[in-house]
Image (cartoon, rainbow, N blue to C red; front, side):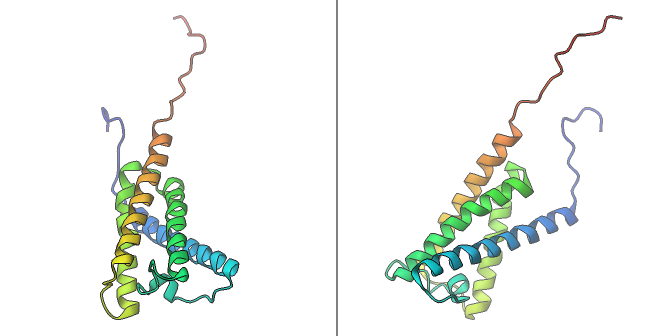
Length: 156
């Protein structure tokens, strides 16, 4: 491909493996954040904290702590986007995919579509944080100065 600055080849295996990796990062670090917060406040651990939309609420301390874990997880996942996706243009796509699969998981776990406003607010805020911070980190890496050899030129 002569004349193109960058050539991108559509590689579905790479894309699917990145989606699976980012999904694993999302749930692994969310579990770690929840376990860490739960151990600090002596709270019991449960899958409800991850998948039940009724747990996320402003009225209970457990709900507020779960919200904090989701927000911290979005920052961690932004680092995952930076390390493994490495493209600012793809950060929003991967973030939306992760949260779409989380929506499907919550729907299956609860046997009904999430209807709590607090669940939607937390997920939209986390999605925005993850996409914007991941894109910022990727763009900083992409826009890094390219070193040019400034050594002595040979004369012909």
